[in-house]
Amino acid sequence: MLEFQTRELGSSNVLDVRGEIDGLGLERFKAGLAEAGKGESKAVILNFTDVMFISSSGLGALVAFYKQLRSQNRRLIVYGLRDVIRQVFEIVRLNKVIILVDTEKDALSLLEIEE
Picture 1 (cartoon, rainbow, N blue to C red):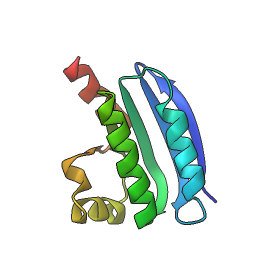
Picture 2 (cartoon, rainbow, N blue to C red):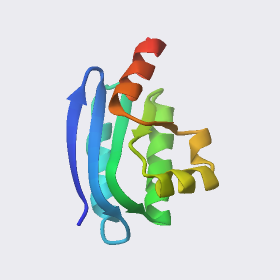
Picture 3 (tube, helix red, strand yellow):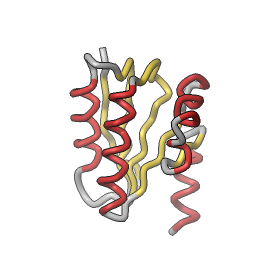
């Protein structure tokens, strides 16, 4: 079962995601993204450390969320991707538009550099 928790970290919102983002968890994933996207944060950081799988529908939801944030001049950063999920991001070229980093510390460092 897909679980998530939203938290604030500096000027960003973080969504910690656990489980599989598949057909059964898709609506919960979208709800988590919507919750993380609320407010005026300059970035949304997704913690995928405990994500085991993401379906094509999950990728579609992620792209739609990225476009929403981009239209608001906000950033989307994803960290903690397992190798197999990172490969999927690279195959569909999401790594060209969504910022992928290894750790939460890397995400925060990146945002500090941009300020």
